[in-house]
Each structure stands twice: as structure tokens, then as C-alpha cells.
Image (cartoon, rainbow, N blue to C red; front, side, top):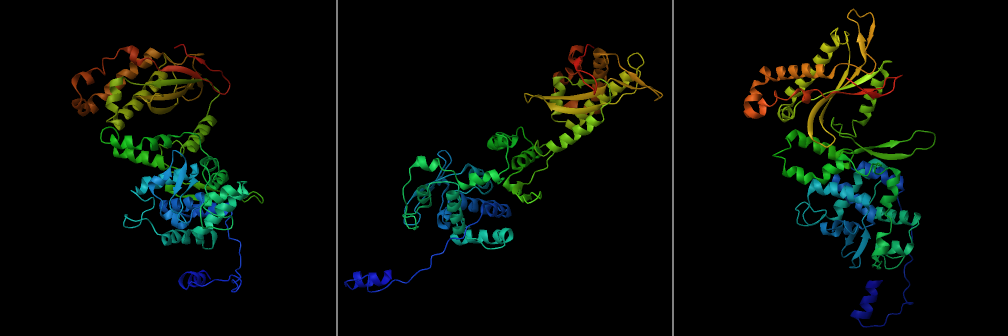
Amino acid sequence: MSALRFLYTITLGKDWEMRAIPYARTHKKLPTVLTQDEVLRLFAAITNLEHRAIVMTTYAAGLRAGEVASLRIADIDSVRVLIHVRQGKGGKDRLVPLSPALLGPLRDYYRAYRPRYWLFPGQDGERHINSRSIHRSLDRPAVAALGRSVNPHLLRHSCATHMLESGVVIRVVQGLLGHRRLSSTDCYTHVTREQITATKSPLDLIRRRALIVSRPPLEVADIIRALADCVTGIAGLAVSAAQRRVLHRLAACRTASLGGHIQKCDHGDCEHERIAYNSCRNRSCPKCQAAKRLQWFTARCRDLLPVTYFHVVFTAAPQVGAIALQNKRVIYGILFRAASETLLEIAADARHLGARIGFVGVLHTWTQTLLHHPHIHCIVPGGGLSPDGQRWICARPRFFLSVKVLGRLYRGKFLDYLGPPCANIAETLSPPEFSEVGREGDTQWNRWVDLQLPGPSTAPGRVTG
């Protein structure tokens, strides 16, 4: 009809009578939208970082497929928390809020793909991705998660519906979506920046439904990601390849880069679902090992005897710590061997306790201030079995073993084991550095029996030994 009107009025210069030609009746249909749970399942089904970033950006900001494809890196303003949409439908620019829940996946995608100019570049890298590729990135995950196909414009409709359902003013939604009228998607209506930044994105709203697992304000992984460039810069000096791999695994733990799965409540009719990202399962990860640490601690608590427990700490001279940095297996093995033999030998001596004891030893290599300081914490019961194994011999009240005796024997054993088996290590060190290891005074090796830990029926107190 518009073409005919142009022909008559512009080309032929004739009058156009609007009532002379009736317009065809159009059928108005309500747009199909996804529920918030369906959006969650769709995100969980997308394993590719780039596709996940594209789909989440489309939904969180309510953009058209062409607007997502033409985004530039400079359009993501993380300081003002805005996304600049350039030349949208109708040739208008507009601003939409940048969801904090979207910023994390975008940063993960940027670290993995390192785009230069376009946020989502095409195969040649010179042009942005086309809209057809965005449609294809949704086909397979949508069918797998929802059993039907989903197009990018359906996500845009879902975004608008969820914002209206959450109470966002309809005029604000109109401006965010770039509509000239409430019933049209032709042009753009300006909305002030204060209104934009104060508007909650639907991605933030469904974050409460476990799209992003709740977490403390700061984690070890956050620090690693923040200092990733610094670690890379000094990798050849202080961080080995194995340590770099551990840092990478810790930074990726429970993020989209490792994939995820859906957890569903089977209690009654609840059927609540949430996304859980996979763990790295690295033995150095504080998040992955938290459950195992608690299980180990619970198992040790069940083994407690109804006696007083003592806390014994074995350490070494600072020069030994410098040697251990390059010879961890050898030095830490010597540390455990000297500590265990010292405890067993002194406790078995009839002049001190005269019993066979048991203990738990844990190696710590760093202090609370992150200084390298290898030492072993031993939890020792205040007593042991008699040599014939027929009775229990208790230690004196509030006293376990002599600190000076423990220190002198441990010092001798440690230096003895460090000598002949580690002659090749000594040759690589300067003579003053290695010779100072054996010249430490007794006061540097006598500081270990430190605290008295309570058993099931005792109270804590200081050790007077």
C-alpha cells in the first residue's frame, strides 16, 4: 500500500484518496515469550563462551539481532554501567543499562577470544558477526533445553515482558527497547541516563533464582583474575608452569568457562531449578576442597580420645626455607621425617613419657602474612600405650614433653638428614648461606610446644614446658 501511494503521489503526481482503497486487515498476535525458568535452562544449555555472551546480551539488554551483531568493544561502558547501541532500527542511537550479572560473562568471553574492534567479530575478524550466525547459535541449545526453536527477537520480547512484570514503568521500557510508540518498533524515544541506570535488568532479577551462584564479596579467584596480567608478566621469574596452571584452574572454578548443570528440587511440588557451574577440583582450590576439609575434620573429631591434646609445631631456620623453594620434595620429606622421629623417640624414652604415641601432622608452607615459612603442626594426645601395649600412660597435667629436649634432638636429626643425602643441594648454594643453617642457636629450634588443645572433657590452657 505504501508503494502504491508513493507511485500516485510522487511519481505520477496524482491525488491519493485514503478512503478509496481499503487497507488489508492484519491479524495482531501476542508475541511468544519465555518464562524466567526457560531462560535459565537456555543459558545452561549453551557451553560456548561466545554464544553464551551473545544470548545473554540479547536478553539482558533487550536488543535486536542486528544491534547485538554491530556492538563494538567501546560500546560496553563498565564505568557508567551502560551499553551504547549505535544506529538501531530507525537510524537512532540509544543507551541501555549494562547488567552487573552480564559483565562477568562478557569479561570471561573477552579473556578467551580477545576481540579487537567488534565485540562479536566474524570469521575474518574485520567485520562483525552477521544476524544469521546469531540465529544459528540459538537453534541447537534451544531445542536441547526447551524442545523448540528460539530466535533472538523472542528473547527481546521476553526481556520486555519480564521488565513489565517486575514493575518497570512502561515508558522506560519503551525507551530501552527503542520504540517510537508503544505499539511500534520504528524509532527511538530518549530516556534520561538517571532512569536508565536506576532500572533493574531482568538478568539481575533472575539472578536470585540461582543463575549465578551466591558467593562472598571477594574470593581467591577474584584476586587471581584481577592480577592475571601481573602474574603473566613475572611468570618467568617467580611462577612456574605448574603454578600457572593451578592459577588458571582456580580462576575458572565455578564459572561458565567450565560448563555447568541444572539442579532441580525434588521435594514435593517445588521443582525449583538452578544452574550450578562445574568445579575445577584442584587440590589447591579453597572452594573445591571445603567439603573434603570438613569431612576430614569431622572424621578426626570422631577419633578424639578423652584426654588432653597438645599442639606441637616443628619449623626450621629461614635459610632452610630458601632451600625448600627449589627442593620441595626433599626438604619437606626431611621435615616430616625429623619431626615424627623426634616425637616418637622422646615420648618412648622412660625418662620423659615412656609410651608409644600417635599424632596427626599437617604441613604449612606459608604464614598468615604470605611469607614462605615451612613448618609442621602436630596434634598429639597427652599420653600413649605402654611398651607392652596393655595400659595407657598419661602425660603430666598441663605438660607434655620438654621443649628444649625436643628442639635439640629435632635440630640434630634435621641437619643430619640435610647433610649427606643433600650434598648436591649444598653445592649449588653459596658457602655462607648453607653454613648458616647449622649455626642457628638452640633458641631458634626450641619454640614448638605452643598450645594445649582441649579433649572431649578438658579445657584449653598454656603449656609450661
